[in-house]
Each structure stands twice: as C-alpha cells, then as structure tokens.
Image (cartoon, rainbow, N blue to C red; front, side, top):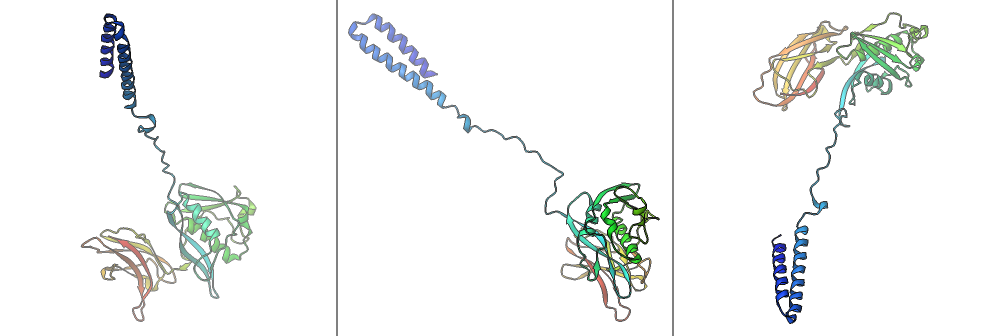
Length: 315
C-alpha cells in the first residue's frame, strides 16, 4: 500500500508540473507518469501474490466415524461342545473346547460348531444332521429355547444315541452360566413329530437340565482360572474330575518349571462318577511373572501324575 500511496503523490506532482512546464517538457513528464503507473500496478500484484494459494491452505478432513460393534477379524472366543463316543463297552460324552470367530451370539456359535465341526477326540462323532440350521434362540428366566430347522429330525440313532445327543446339546448350551434349562422347538413349534424327536427318548419331558455324569473325557477339566488369566492371591481353582477316590492335586509352577504353590482337594464324587472341585492355594508371588496352573490326580500304585491339565497364567 505504501508504494501505491507514493505513486499517487508523484502523479499529482507530475500533473502540476505539466501544467506549468513548457511543451518540451511535457513529453518527459508523460513518460515519467507512465513509469509511476507501472510501478503501482506491480506493487498491487505483489500484495495479491503474497496471499497463500487456496489449494495450499490447510483444510481439516471430516472426522471418520468409528463403529464399536466391529470386532477385529483375528479375535476369537472359546466355546465348549460335547460330542458322543461309542466303544465296545460303553457310550458316553466327550467335552472339547474349540475356538470360533468372535460373536455376541455365543450359544448359536457353539451349536453351529457342534453341528458342523468334527471332534478331535479319537472315536468321537457328531450326531446332529449336518444340514441342521439354528432358526432362533430365546432366553427367559434361565431357560434357553432353541428353534431348529426340520433337518434336525433326520438323525438316525438308537435310544442311547438319542439320550446322549440331547444331553450333548443341553450341556453345550448350559456352559453359559446363566442358562439352567433348555427346551427345543422345530420350525417354531413343538408338535407330535417334534416331540418324537429321533424316535426314542423324545421331547416329552423337556425342559432339560445339565448333566455331566455321562462325560468321561477328559478326565479333568478346569473352569477357573481361564487360559491367559492374571491370577491373584489367594488362588481359587475350580473344575470337575472323574478320578479315583475323588482326590485332586493342584499346583502353580513358574516359567522355569519351579513349583511355587501346591494344594490338595476332593471332588464331590469319585470315579466312576464325576464331581466338581474347588481348591484354594496359598499363592504369594514375590514379583510379576508367568507360568502354569497344573491339575492332576496321583496314581495310588506309584504316585504318577495322571490326566494332567495345564493352564497358562500370569501374575
């Protein structure tokens, strides 16, 4: 702006001199005035050029929305499922823990695993027909009602298989602590065909309740602590066992295998029955670390540690 003001001053002065000067000087004055006007135009363009170009100005992009309902694709959950196993001497259930993709519909995921995934226990098998679909699940006052598609009725098993098959579904669902009873529906209703189920035991006495007495494998399983859990003192260990005289041993070992705590307890029932146990260990870590919780039973013959279960933990 100072250059423009100076150009205006020179222009006014030049005009006065042109009026007073001779004709010979007039031409010089005109050239002088043209020069001043050119300088004024250049100054104005320079000020405009000093403004930052629009495309180079900082523009903040709109904030992206976050969807909290979307879980990482790598996230998984553990579900316990119960399969059937038949030997030359007996027929019973086996419990397996499988990993499935994360979902809020845990019961449905567990049942679909029971329908579609082969067991890893040698000799165990699926009983639910592979085309079976879960049409819906309702939960009310501790009762879970599962609505199956009509394909569920196409299983071909005997009376023992039917009883175990029903119990495998019930035990799988009641792994969820809040579920105490289970009922079945087929295509949204319980008509005579649905009540007949697979032709032997049927649905006449539903709702069904949890029963782990026919679960022979594994001999021991631990429900607390969970794998990867950070344990605290005092340490409480819970699970079930099907062991001689119901005697169960538990201990904590560190990452080097050194025993840091040990305790003994009794299940509510001994083999051939299955009982639940709770053991409390005087666990007093001196520093943060990691290791395993081991649960087993000792052979009455030679003291060997049998059917040991190891749960990785930290503290």
